[in-house]
Image (cartoon, rainbow, N blue to C red; front, side, top):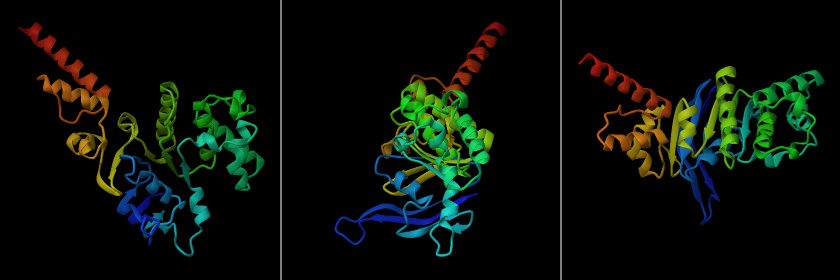
Length: 291
């Protein structure tokens, strides 16, 4: 279920002295099965953009097409389309409200008027996706859990709707390293196993290096670059010019090159850098033995 954004512009307080252009003629296509990372400095338009993708905001001009249908068209079943697009806000655990984990996750499927058996199957499926054991956690209060577990419950509530597209706005914000890694591992597995299309907003370039198949770079309400992580992170000067960092591996590569170490120009993952250094070291040892 592709999502196409055509010439999307959004203005806040339009027509007043406080008019702010948050998005300016933005266009891109999210194809089935992609994992798209959306990056940009604060105020670049990332959150405004993702709120258009399931119809929470209406464009000032332009279109959002979901599976070829204009999300804001006159004769479109907007509710049906929105159910196929799951949106996870920052700190989604603040929206938990039910007395048990299972009831909270079941809230969406119940509103879809599904059978009790289907609801139960979806709750179990969603809990498995977020690595929460059903027998251990289903009847517990979500408010007794850790912050990372609560966030996983909130994400499970979205996954229980079985969306074709999952949109996440800073899903690891505020979590400790262990909670952050669990969220990232969960998303990695979900993408590989279920082939769900994922669009994720994040300030962490290391998270993007780990997960994204394509990056969209935003600045001042516009898309300034798009490409694979390898292509984007090779353009370090461009990234720093708009106030963005690059992954730790890219920074380390730059430091090594400044010290005379010969490295490929497009290394951006620590595992790749490690493998390259080990190969070079082994090659050096073999040459030494040959002499």
